[in-house]
Structures are given as C-alpha cells and as structure tokens.
Image 1 (cartoon, rainbow, N blue to C red):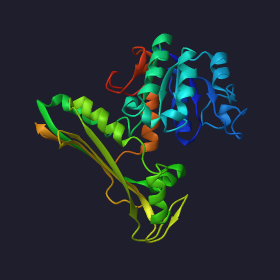
Image 2: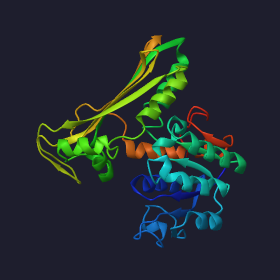
Image 3: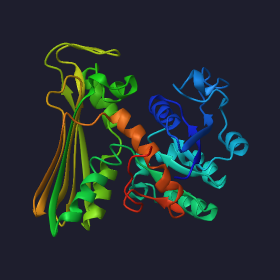
Length: 331
C-alpha cells in the first residue's frame, strides 16, 4: 500500500472527523491543515484533532500551506456550495494537489454550474490531478450505492430512495440546517430563500439518472417542515410541540413525463424507525435496506478518507463517483 501526504482544508465538525480518521490510518500522513477560524489558526493540530500530529500548525492560507507541505491530496470540507469553494479548489489543483471534497454541489457539478465545473476540470487536467465530490448523502446512499446496485439488473424502470434520519445525535450545525426549533413561518421563509435544508438532492437525482441511462428532462425537489408532536431536547436545541423538528425533502427526475428516480428524505429530531432504503423496480426487482440508518457525520468522514487512494490514482480532471473505482475500507 502506498503512503499519501494529506492536507486538511476546513476544520469544522466534518473536517475534524475526517482528520481524526486520517490520523489513524497507517498509509496516510497529515502534513498540513488550513482553517480561517481565529481560535484554530496558529495552533497545533493535536490541540484540535484527536490523534493529530503535534508538528502540524494550522494555516489560514491555502497557497502557503500547500507550498510548504507539498501534499499528495487535500481533504476539503469548507462549504456546501460550488460557487463559494471555486477559488479554493483552483488554488489547490493549480498547486498540483488532488482533492476529495465534501462540497455537496461538487457531486454532480455540471447540473447547475457548468462554467465553474469546466474551469476546475481544465485546471485539474492541466496539473495532472483528480478532483472528486463525495460524502454519504450526496455521494453514496441515494446515488452511488443504488447506481452500483443496478449492475445485477437486466433492466431498470424506476428507483426510489428513502432515507429517514433521527437527527437527535447529529452535530449542532446539522440540527440548525434542518431548522430544528424554529417556527413554521420562519422555516418556510428561509427554505424558500435556499438558506435552509439539505443540499444535493437534485445532484443525486441527476447522477443516479445517468447511472441508469435515463435521459431525465425534468428534475424537481420540495422542502417542507416536519413539526414536533411533543417535546424534544438535544445538546443543541429544545423543541416544543408545534415547532419544527426537521425537514421532509422530496424530489424526482422524469423522462418523457414518467418518474424514473424518486427521493424521500426525512431528517428530524425524534424520528422513529430510521432507515436507509433503496427500491429498484426492474428485472429483477431489488430492495436494499439498512435498518437504523447510517450516521451521516461518521460516514461522510469515512467516504472522504477511504476514497483517497482512488482519487490520487485516478485520471486527471473533475470526476464524479461514477467515473472512479468503487472505494473500499482503507487501513
């Protein structure tokens, strides 16, 4: 197994989990870290990340960090939105560094951001490095995994993905993102403005449609609140009956007026019977279930770290999960 030099860009909750996991892998060496938070810049990574190396100091500038550390790959966890991270990704690839990122819109970037995607692709190709957006959702459960599962089918007519998540034990920013504790009117105002809720459902639909060979001509999504029917307390929020407990995000992709891909995502405090389920209607029909669901924070960190060898060894350019080998556990 080859050894890879890693820089961690972004030390929020997911970035820290990914760094903790990477620090325990025998084939990975964390050589640098970047964050702009004043309480992190200048500190040793061991003070922020369990198991992190004491000789790595957190920078506040990507270019400087990459120049000094000369990594093979960057684990990038700063924002959900491609327009926000465009400059960060270009800086990294132009330094000759591969990127694996949790940016949700990077999963299938050409759906809404063709110009940015083309720019990143060209820069990565010129530098001979690979860029990949991944995670647990989007990145695996509702797109890559069902896509891989169709390999045993003769034909597929429709795929339905359901993910029901109890958000009670998720990180504070996640509970805030799903509107937990808000009133319904405030939730709808922020959701309509695109400032609240899950990011990446249309990208999952588009990528899964490509995986199945569907020529989707319509993609839609809707976000509604799930209201609490009782009192709930977490480490971050206190919810009373009638307040928002979380979100119900639905979406579909149509081909010639027929729904080919359908998504049902419910993430809320106190969800009963959490589960991840994939239903494939075709020849043969298939149903895949993960009772209890998959913990998104830990699983996203695992996808980022376990995917490193495929990214470093991958073809140059901006790629999707459909274009690289299936990742597996990294020791």
